[in-house]
Length: 219
Image (cartoon, rainbow, N blue to C red; front, side, top):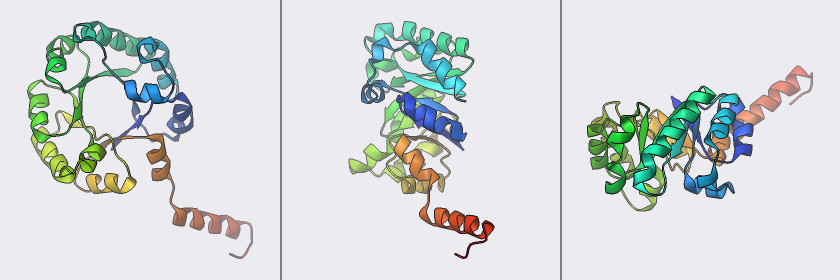
């Protein structure tokens, strides 16, 4: 099971990465905006070093702007990862124009992730392009009335493990449980979802009873 912290909020990184729960961190322009960051101005060398120092093995960053600039940007992200000592993954939206940049980015030798996936047919495209990951937006699919669970099962069957299905846009731990029970094992989690995954009221109650007993108090 590989989990990724899905935020550009560095305070959340500091809070949650030391749990040891996460293989890495994923970011995109929307997450950066929510964290108050200017995405084009991000210093990826500094971001990668901070992620590494907090225990991340991977940092996923997303291309932006003119498609013609994707390859240069990807090269910089890969170099930032190499300098920091972690694996950087280039995220590319699954639009027709963006997909045309995939072969040139793949030629750089680093891993890629195709993102904003909604339909199993897109996994066929990702597999043909030899992508390392695809990121279906499960919560958004469900909210749009799509058969999200069925779609994810079909995506898993089509991929056969490559590209790896990195499920994004999860809303609840229950959604994650349903997907894990179907064999999905790679997820991005928002900070709020991560905290909900770590906590259960009945477990908290049991732990308090243990501590009371250890102190010689009657529960």
